[in-house]
Amino acid sequence: MRFDIITVLPELLEGPFSHSILKRAQQKGLLEVHLHPLRDYALGKHKQVDDYAFGGGAGMVMRVEPIAACIEQLMAERTYDALIYTTPDGERLEQTTCNRLSLMENVLILCGHYKGVDERIREKYITHEISIGDYVLSGGELAAAILVDAVGRLIPGVLNDETSALTDSFQDDLLAPPVYTRPADWNGMKVPDILLSGHDKNIEDWRHEQSVARTKARRPDLWARYRGELP
Image (cartoon, rainbow, N blue to C red; front, side):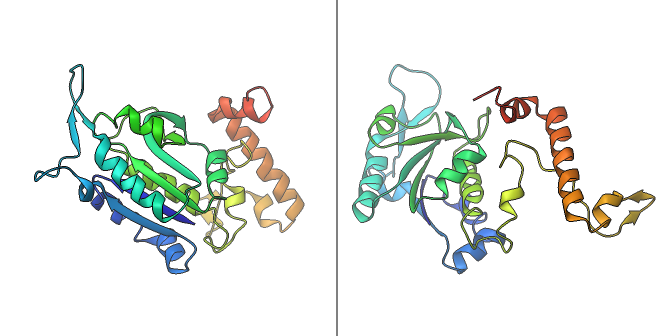
């Protein structure tokens, strides 16, 4: 799977893709992440990528021309399954979205910045608008890193244990159950006996019960969805 990311600040994205799971995924040839500095397509001697908003108001707006030039060049090189804009007013990122994106081959991400991009870019090119939550960041780079991480780990072969992603929180609209490791007794706090029993079916049932209880208590919205009360 290939991600192309258009960004004003590529330096912010170098770290997240240079370590741990995503680094190994790239080394295995399972994942490609390519950063495209928007200033390479900037206007004039001052490398301008933004300007004042028509109608006034605080903040700058990312200009059409540099973004369009970069997108057009990338689209001439390959066909994209999705052109994503990271923005606070987009669809909230959820596990089901990550699952769908993980089945794609080429994804282009445009990182929002300043007050956002000229609306004409969104109208002409963007197929998906995604938010990672109801808050505002200084730019879309961190949101893009989160998106790539959440999707990339679902690609077959990326995780050492491919069943691990299937038992994560949100995969079945339930939160994950509590987990334990050695020592079995730490300062008098003991691991539940059921997890030491070796009885797989009983352990599976216990974990499901814990997931249900945790979801009810912590995320009633997820619990309602699990029960089919919400879309």
